[in-house]
Length: 103
Image 1 (tube, rainbow, N blue to C red):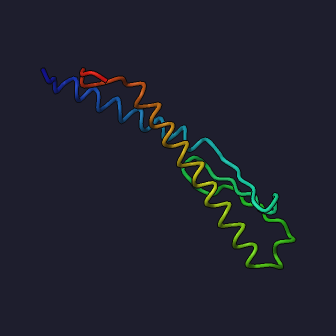
Image 2 (image 1 turned 180 degrees about the vertical axis):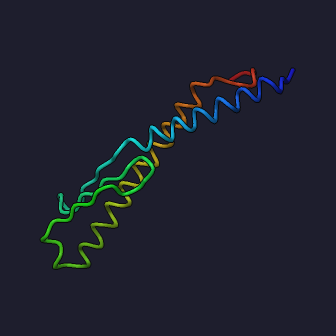
């Protein structure tokens, strides 16, 4: 039998867990280096850039710098996405099956 009260409690719990997860993700940081360390980019768990270090030797070669920055940004975004997916799956996995059927 479907219990609306239980469903409401479950949704409320999911919302609380989502807010908690959002806070945890924001507190994490990920650093990537490209070009043997010529560019180092650090982002938080929400994908926001929080630090960028560029070696002075790259400033004379605009094309190389652009390639290094693009690589660093893409690598950092992949790390953030993978962590978000993993964290979300862990959160959902901890809930069990809320509908009571076979898993």
